[in-house]
View 1: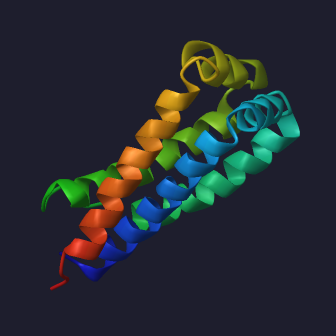
View 2 (view 1 turned 60 degrees about the horizontal axis):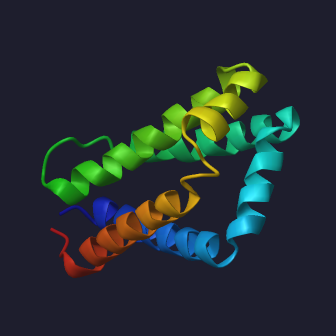
View 3 (view 1 turned 120 degrees about the vertical axis):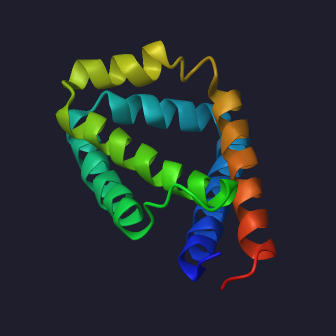
Length: 134
């Protein structure tokens, strides 16, 4: 496995673990903060710009669709970040909040999203530290 895949796997994995744990320990505060952020068009623009940089960096550095599950998951995370940033940058503000808060049921499924982050983080971190580079 390439050193780049292992680095990104560790980076994204540890990030997801820490975010997931933060979400679970500060549940209500996180829901309130995300809701407020999505209702503020200036903040969603800033979030879109930052997420665009991260998504583009991951896609340009690691757009590999073969070589095992870990490689493909790292690539998918990069593409998901890029697509999410484009939503923040190009969707009308009301649609953004409606999509994330309404259609994705962020408030109702909050702990499911936190658990997904934790599981993804554990998988990527374990895979990144367990595997060897070529």
